[in-house]
Length: 287
Image 1 (cartoon, helix red, strand yellow):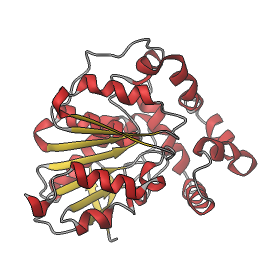
Image 2 (cartoon, rainbow, N blue to C red):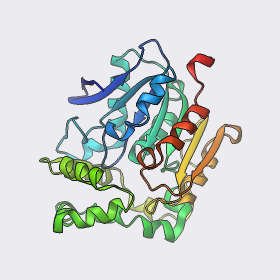
Image 3 (cartoon, helix red, strand yellow):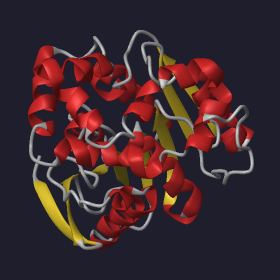
């Protein structure tokens, strides 16, 4: 897939852009520690069904710039990057799919620029108003890494020690050796691991981590939304996804559970996810 480079907001954003420019657009947003490569199994299928696909490497990841300041990784800056890339491509309205931090970002985009979003697919991460307040102590325990990653320098050292053993444990058993080697190679580049961890440092709020109930006052989403969660996800439990229904009009919310897959659904269950996307998104040839 060809890479394009966009000079936006003082940085360079790399993106994979595929498909007919006149076709309806789907934007795919990855999370930690990924890049646009996460969507390798989705891009060709979506193209075959008539969509134009835009999959950026979010700032700090892949071939995109890695600003040194932690504050540069606040979600509002990543949102500005994504929208600037789409503006440069002349794309006004689009379907939006996110995973992990990309899902958190997608929720934010859908809530703050609703006129541009046709439909949203949130994978693994539910609406940010739910989170730990919905999952309680079990979710806080499962999200131990959010706390570890706040320790600058210490987290980097621990994740890399003993041939990246703690990182391997964090990623879980569903990651095959080839993918694990690729992750470690990518994060071994100067500044790459720190840039990825900056997403946690810029967007983590301890008061949210300690919440005992969902933050129902947070902005809601008005477009059709499909939440996708996998039973093998050990870091993000089901309640934080299910509570998303409180932030979407009842008739516009759809929930799908994928049995057996780990956290990295696009890679662990590509055919299942592709089928769900094709069911949920209006296919261009049917419009």
